[in-house]
Length: 470
Ligand SMILES: [Fe+2]
Image (cartoon, rainbow, N blue to C red; front, side):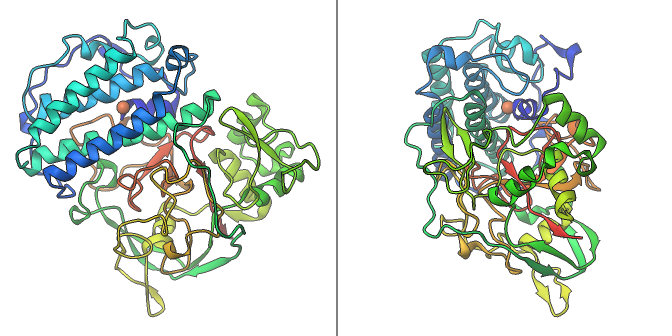
């Protein structure tokens, strides 16, 4: 996950003093009983194979040159990233949880994201594609062998961590492909919606005491979700759906990117630095064009396509979201407000203390509820998935696009780092929180309580936003 955060944060390696150091693993004291999903060995095997199939699908069509790609602060060499995924599995499950010896002696020197500085990853003596996948196959084979027996909860935790880590890299690979203009992944399905429309308007969320964060009953959680604590919420109104391309286009067409009064000082500085005139993948408007319904095209993968007017605006950063809000006389929700709108319920004229598992209730997500798990290679129109509405009537709180919130990424009261100690704490107080997951997010990650976090300038991740009334 460290590397996913690096993809996100575009910072040089934080721990330069540790570069090149192989940490000795005597971590058995960390094998304590942490909350897990309770997945059986058979279920873990299935999850391991499912996420690996996605890793292969996102990488197997790439040329040798594409597997390395250009050195940018926001991407990793794909070949390195694949090996890192395998290394993370080996490090935490085979070596840490089961106490096995390393499969490759120099694996830590190649793929430990805590010690291999980002800019050096293009210069490493990496195995070739077949060598990297042979390593991944060896690790997976040993994991599956270990899971022929039942597994105790302390060890299950590390399998669940490693599976989710690969899930995160799958999504990172998806937006890396978009960043670099690679073609659509193999066997991907273009977004479709049976009804193409917008879904305008607000709903009223009741005030009350909200229990923000996760509890041990939530199963596998990340350290930054610890622990649930009470937050007072005043009543507020929030949009039923995320801001659409058509809605955002009105801001662009009214000159929003040229009017500093809508932007924060930091946002305007970013806009000037990159000379942004519209969202990063939008192409200059050409007027009417064949096949485009409202005149805007964008670069999707390696091709130019019409922008779907009623799909959520995607690949916008926090500064752009905030500027839109100022122009529209709206605001971003806090993460507590977002969570209450997503999984809260009314209790008379107050917000209930109950929290749903998912916006629609307790049933596991299906394509009727949410656009997740690469069901489509893109966001669908905001009117889709009515079966996924929250108790208050908000749609697409889960899936489609991540949603920026107003909240700074800060530790909750009771936070303590989990064994993968660099997952959260290096990034507190310098990131904004996003919630809800995208079309490329696994249902394992896109739980309502999951806190994603990126710097406010990142417009390469699959993120949009929804707004609240002032
Ligand atoms: Fe990682």
